Image (tube, rainbow, N blue to C red; front, side, top):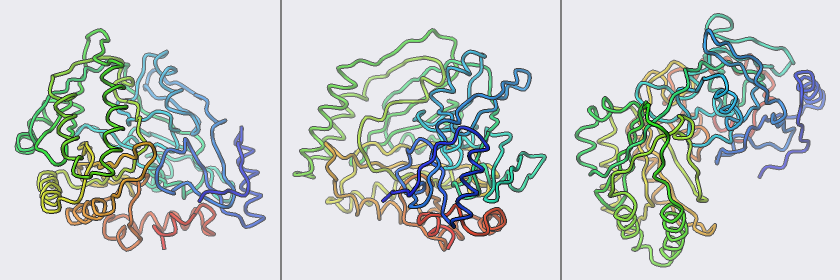
Length: 423
């Protein structure tokens, strides 16, 4: 569980430094939390907890360079309107925006688009306070090694104070979704990736059904295909009731997946809006999620193997959708996309009315397939990997460890989640 002994909400760099001094003096662990969105225990501690929510200002907007410097505790929800005012936007965003800038980069949050890296690749500079209260200014040109580690920092290098993000001019996106089949999308992956800047697809387990989603720059005025009846009455309330029913009759799940595809995903749909309104969507369900990145060229084989596994074990149930997204490789040490273009394959089990649905068989089979195809788990999601796994997965793992040990020799910023990673 997560029962910090002390909870701090600093409002200034000085106050952060005081908390760290106290922690050194009393030999306490320290964890910085952001929006608290990660389903893994990456931000838990029984020592001191620092919540950065009050350090949430926009510090500087450089119109020439299109760069914005923010305090690490700012929520993306609050950053969007500020960027709108200056005619700027982030070129890519994850699905959720009530998360902090520091947390988004630290956990390796991503979206989709083979020309786009994970969100941390938009960071051009950051400042970091280390365990001994020293502030490091990091970028490609100063403290470059720390910068390469700190963009996906897992909260274990120190306290991220400020972040400078590379923006782009404000833009609108059109989203088009249309039905397809698993065979079609896997046989023509390259052409889909070329056709749409932010391409993703949803596969409905226990079927051949796929919904393809294109998002691309547009000049069209905002328009929406959303309706309360379809999105809520059907897409949420009815679905939750049927999923709950299926906890007594698991054989219903395949039928539910196919029924909802027919009901909600067989018509072509179009909508457009400001980029950040299209990227983010509301996650209505309590759910368990796994999200691993595999080399992009293994997409087809891995998905077909997941499908074959479900066919071979009719007792294993899988809720829809399996969401498949694509991300450009980067050079951030612990980025799941380190040195390779990647495919993220996100699986989900909903918890209708909070009820847990047995998911262990599905989880284990999925992890086995992901590992087989060179997968690396999303840091903020549940997974069962330990240091041995990470040493195999990440060529730069020893380099990150060396930087971490140098910046935090006493392990002030570790917790039980991170001890599994580093020990």
